[in-house]
Image 1 (cartoon, rainbow, N blue to C red):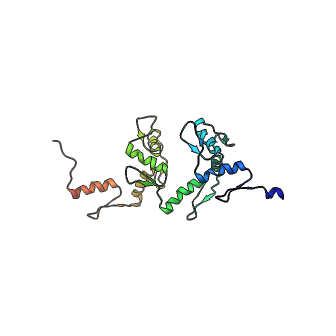
Image 2: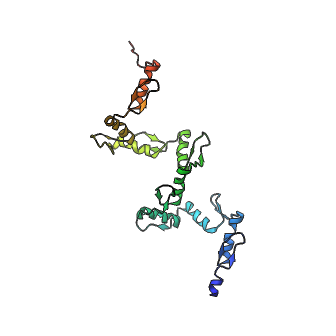
Image 3: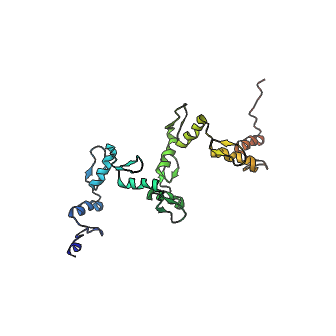
Length: 238
């Protein structure tokens, strides 16, 4: 019983933290005073704990000591490997308290919850754009910079988003994964299939604001609106 009585004899005087070794308490205390004595000798990174610095250094060395026993995946931290294993097990332990959404990581759940709260913490410093993730902000910034990092390896096409490149590549491969369940029509994009389906349903969602005209496609409405504007784009050159 004496062993249990002295098991956690070192106590923090600022919170409820208790530990077995004095060195553990010493490592804990910088959390309260914001002290970060451990410095990276390559970049400006600093940490309050030596193990955090060790983990950080793997970014510079490329070391990934935690290996998946099913595939070739390697990770810099044990937590990253644990998160990866969910892709093999299908486990989704993090559940939304509002809807039926499940996910593999707490980070994904936090991002999802912003759909319910309306929180958009990432702001563009050029325009009024706000978004829920850093990734979305990075993608948005390409509108301002003109950056198009995703390049076709067959032609000169470049895009700012990876899904745009994937869609473009179907022009080269001939792939048309979106199929009509009524006729033989196939398309390269979901939006093209949606537009095609209106030929079967008769839906005309684009409405003229002046008369009763309705069109199945936006370009048909634009053509119609020229009648009201008196615009005549096509002129005889003779």
